[in-house]
Length: 610
Image 1 (cartoon, rainbow, N blue to C red):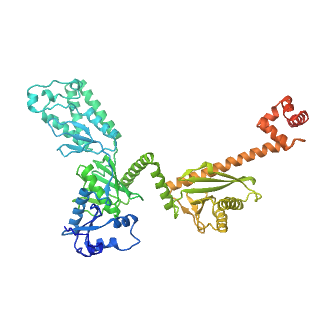
Image 2: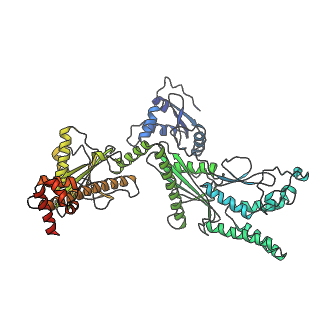
Image 3: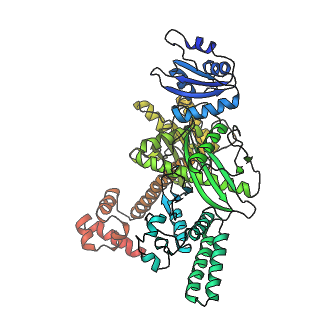
């Protein structure tokens, strides 16, 4: 391994001194910390690629390169040796910019202790103590249900006594309540031999591996033997245990009679340098374990490399060091050298493809739960992620922190109005909502109405020196979009404010000048925000339209009363609130409010009408 004196040697010179041999390189920052470890078939070619000006480099790679002050390397004999060494160094050094597993969840396991008369217990600590560990289980409820089934069917001890042969021989213990209930056969007092107890443990191990046949054969044999001896009470007890076994089988997830022992891995990549790898373990045709780990993808890493290291970690830390002979994956890992004797399958159809979909669905559920927890703890992080997603989905230059949406509302051309709703950071800013009465358009002309309200809105914003929005949405297709765009060009803000139009189908949007609609992802959050904005614009506009229609109806009815003017109508509505209350009021109340002459005219009008 080299240790160059970097104080007087530039990075360019360090790269030029690297050999063309396979090996592992390490990038070191100014504090002397190793921030990245990588492997290479040719060290000089690989490392020099980081310092070539290229637009293909991600922002994270550019940040990494700016921090490098020293390059170290280790030469090995082959590319496979470089892979193994890289793996070892990443685990030991945990460099900041490498693929790192971020999942800190401690999964529940079931352990069969290595001791005299082994106990079967729950644990969250995976130790290399010779005991046999099974799991992990995706939830504590699943683990408890398995343990309860085992204790209901197989009579094992639950005490923590040291049942060494010497202590049992000296008669230091007495039987407990579990012995009298038939849940334990009393190994502590020598009533059960170690050989017989170990046969029960072997059956428990088979159950934990997904094979229920040995325990069924045992229970059926014991039940038959008890029946032959006319010990019907004992036979009934074994019958109840067989019923419990059948109930457990009914609740277990059976995959297929054809898929016996298989491991399934799926990888869910995120735009924020995160990935989630889900692992499904299948034994004897049943799913016996499901878990998900979260990873930081590091820099300059392919999805194949992320999957490879995720599988290796899961096998070592979660899978008990065992991997099935067949592994189902969505794509082949970057190397198979780490997994001797394992066949990787990428299914295109059938039951194995269904297993991949099942695993991917679990990864998505786990990611959603994680993101929800993060949003609760840190709402600002959720907002930043949402704004970044909308910027990408809508092809914007900037994050749409300030969005405005316009909608027209009229009923057969009557009382035309419009609304403008404002969203900031993906949330409604109701104090900034605005109503518009259409002034220059006669009849139901949505295109002209849209042109009027957009022109009025942004002419005023520019005149008052207000802030222009980051995105404007008009509810309607290409016609409304063209009307709004013509106003933007007249006001010279077409190149400053992005503008889109919403079609009738919620996932379709139109961009200016593009005749074909663009389809938003149906499962993405940007579509939810756009739908929320559109619904708010509809609600706000329709509410205003209803109020205006109601007010117009009220005024039109009172205006039909001969000799009653606008001031009298205003006085009546201010006091009575509704026309119905004016109609049912008595003459004395009207006399005191508007005088006897006008009061008589109001009463005569409603009496004749009724």
